[in-house]
Length: 158
Figure 1: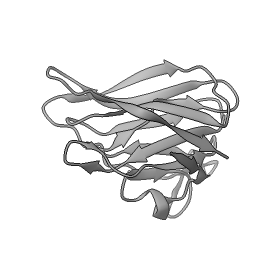
Figure 2: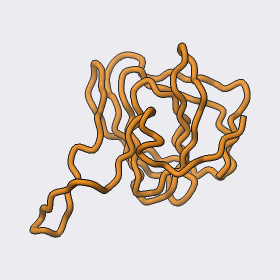
Figure 3: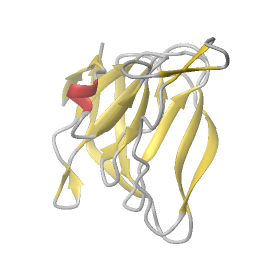
Figure 4: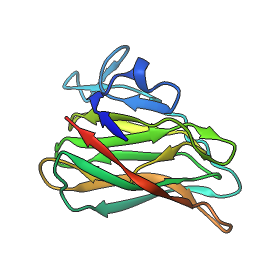
């Protein structure tokens, strides 16, 4: 299977989670020197607590062959690029416990994604710059990771 990665937009990504980026309503703070965009993501956590981790991922190149999709049944997963590099987001809806038709997006370094609970997605895949991300996801007991190895890779092109 081959996919062309589309630019990441809130509308195109809505069925898989949320795009988090500056824009819309804000309030000025810090004596007017800072815009605060408040409450931009819905952290969906079951039987646990939100935790903040750092992930250091290797830079990948396009075209990229995706061989594994994963999902988290007990919590959403929010990826926040720390150093402004572009990254690839591969997602697929759940269809009876397996990934459905995948989509691919290229996220700019100022865009974050909050992948909805139970949404299949590719592994963290920076394609430019350093691969350092802050990740907010569920911390707690119980299995919150399901992996699905693909019989045939999904080739993602720019």
